[in-house]
Length: 114
Image 1 (cartoon, rainbow, N blue to C red):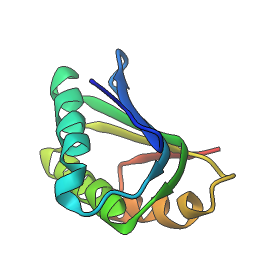
Image 2 (image 1 turned 180 degrees about the vertical axis):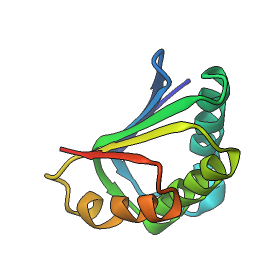
Image 3 (image 1 turned 90 degrees about the vertical axis):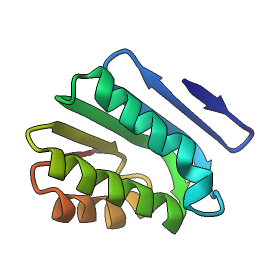
Image 4 (image 1 turned 60 degrees about the horizontal axis):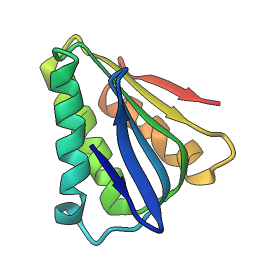
């Protein structure tokens, strides 16, 4: 699945990774449904063993989007024994502040902010 707009691009790759790029300022959780669905589809494709979310080129994510990521982290934690990796960039200020909070929700999460 791939969604491309003027502001953002969201797609999945063959290695159980969901990529988000650009600026995501959608108007609430309903507008983020396609991302939630994509995350769950990729997790199912991996036989519920691993998933990576690559945010290293996502320059902005509003609170509704952060909420979706948080809910997904809780979902993965409840499923248990899943290798969950989130990639970010030290060059994007919101990531340095917000992504470590995902580890509080799912301590086994692998956070790679480079």
